[in-house]
Image (tube, rainbow, N blue to C red; front, side, top):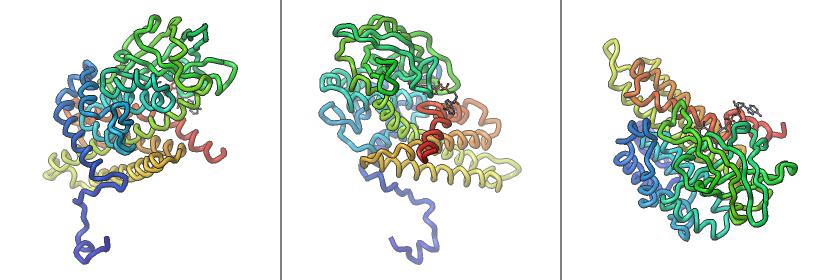
Length: 396
Ligand SMILES: Cc1cc2nc3c(=O)[nH]c(=O)nc-3n(C[C@H](O)[C@H](O)[C@H](O)COP(=O)(O)OP(=O)(O)OC[C@H]3O[C@@H](n4cnc5c(N)ncnc54)[C@H](O)[C@@H]3O)c2cc1C
């Protein structure tokens, strides 16, 4: 649109403009997820920090169609595009409950995509259909006590025995691990075959030999459940193999790209929520006779934060656009994940500072925002691993 005399004279700071990747339908979806989060989830956020969020959240979200927004209609999904998944990843931030957002993302953007991408029709009917309804809860097991960043170093073994595989090993830090009905499990089927020795399995969590050990205590994301799991002579039929035997490493590296993208969207939304709440506080809280937001030093903090958030937004959205349009921009996904999660932590930290002592108190929720955001620099690949992926992509 050409600048008119009026628009040149008057910057449109107050205009709410949607980004080009989102349509009016996406914005309506954003509104309905936000309303749901504000009315049905946020009122319980504090309680769920103590108890973890209840399973009815999955069934309710299934009922509303929110667990299958970008999933095919033939499995009960809404058949929407990738950006609808991004909208969920962002709007769920209004639940004020990072642990809940993470538990849901594990269901929709970590465990379900590999079943849809590599699974047989039978596996999709058995697990994806009820998962979209929220009747079955899923988790994803990559990390082990002795191998996190170094996925190649995992030790969980699956050994063929007639028509079955026998699985032994352990997984740790597994989100949804205590409540899940199914784990998408990364194993080694041929330890001598390097990257070609990995295989994925769909393991029911009630199979004999699956042991859910202690609930792990953590810095933030308290509303999510985080499990240490053991697998002792767990027998699964050969039909539980997900995708091609020996190709599990490549399958899981593909899965991680979507997980990082949605994590980046969540970080961005968390940063924006924290910024908005703190802005309102800075306009109200007075010191030395004026609202603290009017001290230049505080005003500049907001300017810095807003600039970083906007830069993260453009990187995340444009990368999502490329991903949704069939490209596989691993370098930019790593950049988006790295940058957005760093920005979220920096913003939350600055917001605590702007709140002063109140920022250190639980009542204002900014300390929780910081604790929750802090995970995103570690989970789904640490900052250092993102830097490795980016650096190596230049042939270094
Ligand atoms: C709350 C929470 C939920 C999680 N949920 C899940 C889940 O649902 N499923 C799942 O499978 N995993 C999950 N994880 C695990 C998470 O993905 C790992 O913690 C993460 O990948 C890092 O692995 P690690 O903890 O073993 O750290 P390590 O790999 O031991 O890394 C330790 C440090 O060394 C650095 N480092 C490692 N290798 C390199 C290198 N090559 N170059 C430079 N620095 C390096 C790391 O960046 C880090 O700073 C979760 C973790 C947490 C904390």
